[in-house]
Image (cartoon, rainbow, N blue to C red; front, top):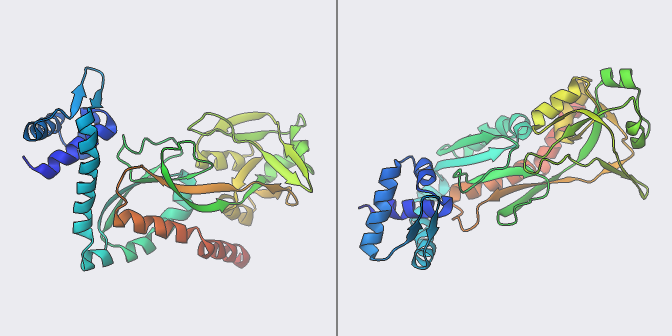
Length: 311
């Protein structure tokens, strides 16, 4: 029995609550994972897991061993990556999930820079706005906008996204240009609804000016739960929409979208990178998080502004 493989298999079973899920994330067969855990229990002479037909629960002894196994696996990872050569060049595979517009417009165009800095880090990128089970799907981190609803996750604040209200020229020609946010509640106007994938609720449209606060209660003909689809619906003239400025700027610059209510303010949207609790933060994950924070910092804002001004 390879004790490293056995501990890794045991930890994954505890975290996923299933031998089948653990096997999938470890790219092993369920039989292999079962045998490794059984061999580990035989070696330790304790029962680590209670198995039923529906789920797997960790025993009291198993919970203690789980915490110790996490530390051992973390120390092994540090031993491999903590050498002077490895520290200068972190390596390994990272599983990351990000929203689709952020991937298309920000992250992927900038990845050549990350690759040049860290050529030995391989990224498996998931692109979605859906809620991710980081432990069950064996994802190292996710980037998400909006307030975090899962308080069990560890998170680092990246930036606050500035929002604006936009509509296509075709929509404005058809429905008229609203002078005030309340005008969007008139019968001829529509919005495009953005529905949070993790809650199913529509993103609230709230604007403020000089102490006045307006929450727009407009009808929609279409709501979506994907950022790229949301932008596409606005470009197609389906209604007014609320967008982070980084998503809207290229279309405003090309004339495909028009900014509305520029003397009104919308509350910024926080953006976070989140990762599982009780999971060792490897060097490769740490440098990726630092790079994303740098990317969304002043350097990115300056580059975005320069792109708009250059025309």
